[in-house]
Image (cartoon, rainbow, N blue to C red; front, side):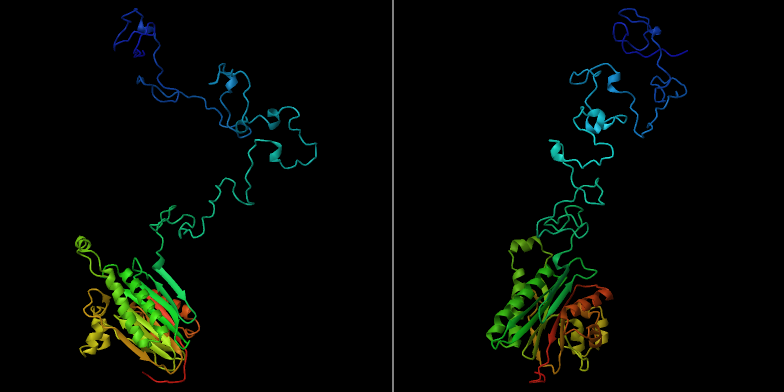
Length: 463
């Protein structure tokens, strides 16, 4: 026996009912004559009244007909009624082009003689959009392209940076792709520059999150018209605040000083000394900020960097430095000795100079690379080092940070790393030397400038 159906209102007078009522309290309708709900719903699930029973097997409509098009359960005209606009559904609806039924053909939707069919055997010409006003013009699709894919975005304006990852998104001012969000390499992560007689390359390396090195290369005309070639390389002190700003400011200031003094006839060695002073002033200026700003950042210290530079002019080779960045002389024919032209301002160099350790012992110590001289407002005392040389043969000057010489510290190692054609291809040689450091581990930023030194027979010797 089926359970009494649970009704909320009387089927006869719509009077609200209470649970357990057998008759309507208003009209007396016998509620037991109301048929019970089926045990299962049409989809085979148990009915809401909880009656037990097996799921009813409902016939499954075929999914497609012989044309592989889904079969509709009925057409609108099969059911009397009107649509939302009041149109009688018994009238055949005007089919939209994308709503054509599978058993209809295009000719059924055309008025007689409106679009005459081609004669039998004739080739149908391509459709002319102008013959059917209002018809959308189909976009041209390149041969072999998938018409379902979206059209590419228009070419961005000149000068717009594109993402190095997706190659389509634009880079926002913060350095991230607007399309995929990929962080873009900084401009200073890898830099290269080449002039007629000097070239330089700087790279972030493989371990650092930014490049704290900087360089400046240039040439100037001496009063007699002969050229003077300049290379400045700076290495930011990582333990200081804003080391990348310090190295950039120092390299630019030193180069500008030399560009001003050399054409006036200042001796290259004096000009190098003055350039180091100018670089120090530029780095010191970075620390000049209001006391209130420093109070907000008590953990910060003054920006600092090292500097090494070279000038090749009139058969004279001048170098200047503060810190542990170095300059090497490498002869073209390798018949003469390769020479390190600078002495580090470092703990290791002091130990060797004092005779307390030999060079191998000093540079094996964990304190070896602690510098004792640098450019910065908190430097103990600025002591620019300068020296001048007159090589007796052609060669190149390698001006570099410790990111290179850590992997070619001995002069023999540096000579072996410099390509034999360095004087003819300075940019290629600088690239090779940076690659040598990266292949060795790239633990630090690495910057290299290669300056060819042409042989001048007159005045050979050493100054």
